[in-house]
Image (cartoon, rainbow, N blue to C red; front, side, top):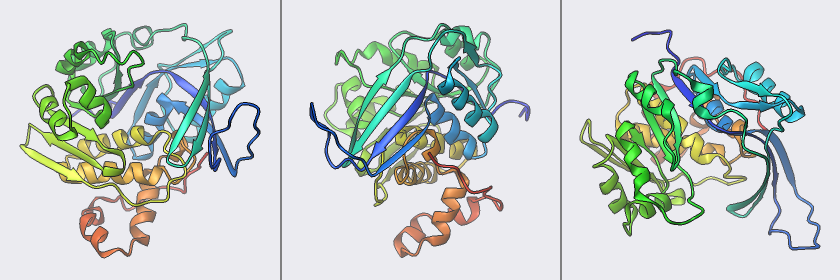
Length: 330
């Protein structure tokens, strides 16, 4: 293995996130609601990048920053604080960094975003992508040229997919899974794209299309199949006090990739990803909610539930001796 390769390669749209929590209920027209909490930080593709970097993965991010306060702030956080390689990224003159306001209440959230398409496409940013052990990718209806190039380089593609606003859920999108090592949709997306009526049935269909299929189920946990090893896993969610679920799916994916690159069994990979996502929702969402090794180490040391101690006993051997410094949250 070439140790000079980045562990994780990423590209996508970056946002400046402003998260308001503790609303109690969504506001109605003409109404002012005072919130109990607020946080800000990089969001969008930054969620994946920070989550991966905090698990000790060398992370290369290709994105676009606006030449404004929001872009400068996000660049400072990602480069100076989180140690993410931004050599593939660009700052666009006269273009404003997209801004998202997240209104978190109960177990849900509403998002309001201002922004425009960036002046550089993913393919322009990537060019001939550098060799990497893995790439975390958000696949869309229109295939990206760099994805095929990365797969040809031997990069393992870990993909997810977003909500289809047209609600057509075209199965043509699944053709891109031929390039992927793993696919990690949530159960709503998985069932819609596979035309099935349960998460388990969707998983069965996806397992025929990609070596590693994972379906996340929110409060029900996650299920997965690894065709390369013949493993199946079904893991429950953690019972945690949720502050904000923004970015939890991204933290799940980063945790799964970190464990996969470590060569862990599927059951451990899935439990670790569920744990990472569960720990992230206890903080204001976005990139800086990611727990990293420090957060996992702190959780394990404080854990006194016998059942969870048994279920997560593998952490005793997996946790690094030095989990790193305390984290900066939003």
